[in-house]
Image (cartoon, rainbow, N blue to C red; front, side, top):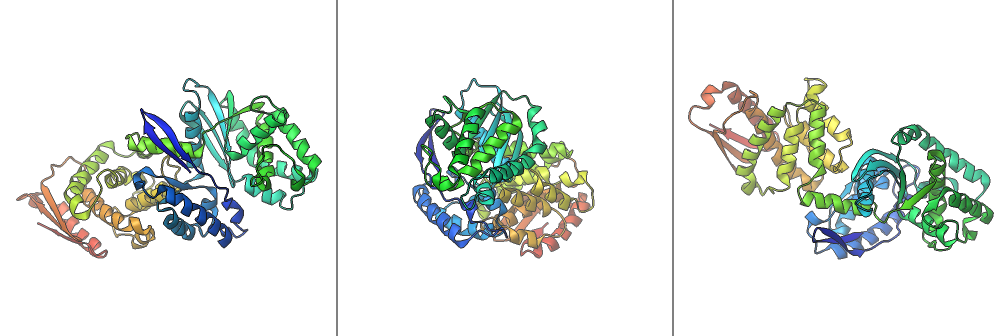
Length: 478
């Protein structure tokens, strides 16, 4: 955990707290996270929660990575974890993890360092490889191998033999082989490592005199030979290696060694910044209205050829409705409105596939795309809003949302559906209506004569009363 404050536009680190939990070691072959691993993690999060108890939710981001992406019982664990931490926990995709790692690394380097660079991060269950320039990542990949998973797979007994090392190298080569050509075509000039594993290796090769500065391929060869000579993890004497990292060190070392060999890396610098620092800078961007999520939404709408003029009309009507209902429904303008606007921007992306049930196509695209800045839960909420914007409301999808989002989604969906109906003609309309609500009874009042001249809208609203009624929402209009 990292705690920071903003001072003169600079991020000042106030606190760093680190506990080695190794959650990835708690997953069995059936992808179930063990009770023991959960208890250890929950105890850690409870301690972290004490430090964060006075911070508002808008200033905290907590994310889960590969282990929570993989575990079949992650939802159950997250519910308990959020109670211990006192804040929401998001599960991010491998590509989003890579983007955030690169962001953290880029901000930790000199501002004039604009070389094309390769960034590598070795976690417990995954390894991220990113190519980028300055603060922009251009290619991101997340591989299903990490220091914990590789150590358990090939060195669980602790024995270190040439046969085991070669088997581990072959497995890693198979993961890397499809990426080599793609990574090399960027002609990156600098290799930078992040994460505890790479920092530990850097400290070891320097302490043993195998390298003067950074990690070289020659120093990794010497470290590999040193491990072989030891023959067992318990006999591995390495200066500056903490006992808690020892059981998973060899798996991380083999990933780094094989990556150097496959990609032809000669030397690698080590960065202080990584995922946590990337999260801080990403959160700062949201606070300062430089939200990467808005760029993701706009890019997706453009990719699927959405009607820009219709998006603006939909968003304008949705905002008008939102403003009239916000106080009664206790909606937050800064946060809740953006979800409504994003859903309005994306509700027609499914038309690029087929008109029939296009809301389902749109929801599928959103749920399964790599959207920078969005967690898996975020994408699920946005997909549900788009799925619900027309026809019968998908009760099952709405009920699958977390409790704290279910009521919000119900309200936002209602507003979005009204915006869709009122803009069906696809021409700009003047907002000749007023909305009011008491609990879930919405009253929609038009100016005199408006509905007489818009008979299709009137018919749509009559049908909508039946759709909304199924979810306990009453709509009256005149």
